[in-house]
Image: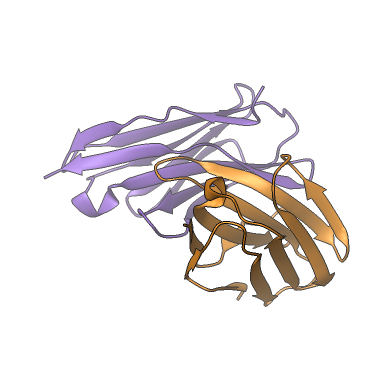
Length: 109
Length: 111
């Protein structure tokens, strides 16, 4: 079983809509969770980190963590064409980083 | 702030030639370091993981090797490149339960 699983997409949303990206992980003792954005041909950049159950908001981005369900999500409000990218979920388990395969998001103008 | 310097940004190498990609870390000590490869439109494939000098874990059997001669230096090598070694190579580091930070990546094309 993979440590981190994401729906590869592609996910398409109209401009201004809410994009919802989901991720599940297998290690129950994981404590640190991250969302990265990767534009084509570029290296991933950190968007959000979350360590506690519940929601964490940063501008148009909200990360949600549910440790009981081993589920972490990212909501992007008022989606913009510049949000079109691949979004990678990452988890620290056993002192090692694990990345999901990423979800491709396209925001349609 | 934590920074990874990775070079070169692009590289074209003939089949059978050697390879050496280097990354260096600034702004943190004793980081965990990673080498990933990414095929076009695909996810990150973990190649090597290091928790310290001389400590390398290999995730998949392959034509590549890695070394960590110094705390903040991580090197990816090959003695003879294959066409299948083409891809986008990323070096990443993290200071222990904190976010991972990435180098700019190296686009390797084996011809």
